[in-house]
Length: 175
Image (cartoon, rainbow, N blue to C red; front, top):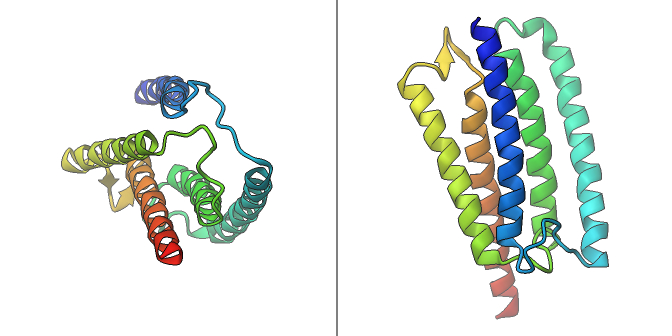
């Protein structure tokens, strides 16, 4: 019974998450469109970012295949190993695009975007903290599925840090 509740909760969480993404995109884009608009240079850089992220995930999964015999002794559940691949790919793609100046679209309201990303990060870290406090984050020495929130919160924090470093670097170059 626990697995059916868990599966239903996961499905509902994904559905709610997708609805929130649409709402957030409309909020952070100045023209209230869901699609973020990029110029040709940004589109090309983003394509390169996706390609690099694809290879990063491919290498990550190849390493995980090699480590498959060790799944029993790794400190995370197999579910988390594959979720980490997704987060790894996202971090590689987004950080590449930020560094190359192709992450923020032409119609993006940057202050709103930063606030939303900070809220998402803090929310996920809070959920991870609550799971840890209630004893659900790590069971028998293995990080459980609730660790996705921890990784998601850390991912947004890393992305924010890279964005901040990029902004500071741009200011120094302008001065």
